[in-house]
Image (cartoon, rainbow, N blue to C red; front, side):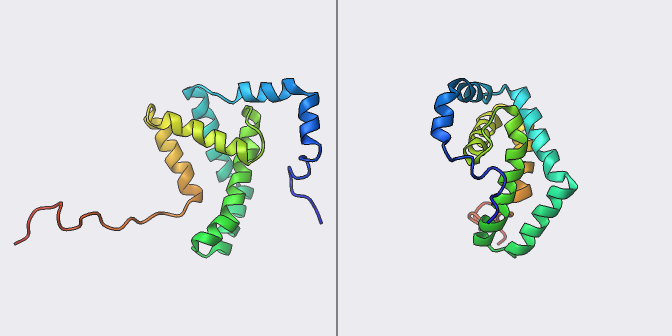
Length: 147
């Protein structure tokens, strides 16, 4: 059985972390980014999704998912997460799921302050989340009376 990229690094992870506390604290200190830095990382992540090899991986995952939400989580989300991990680790985020979550929280915190970040974030989400169709909200009550 072949370990995927990044797997197997958990062995002795606590001991390795204890031996190099500065590396862990440097990572934690490097992750909080300014809005401008967050834009740069976001742009790099979006660019990575457009790279031919990643676009092909995403397309294959979409094909396997067949527009089924459960299968999207099973096939598409891990590929999207890996693509993001490969980019954000260069900016001080850990190269695991936790790093992606921290990155997402950081971007979310800037969305309300910066419309450009909000737009870029929406574009990124659209690359790997299926379009959500919401049921009509009060259809027929919010418009002009037709009778």
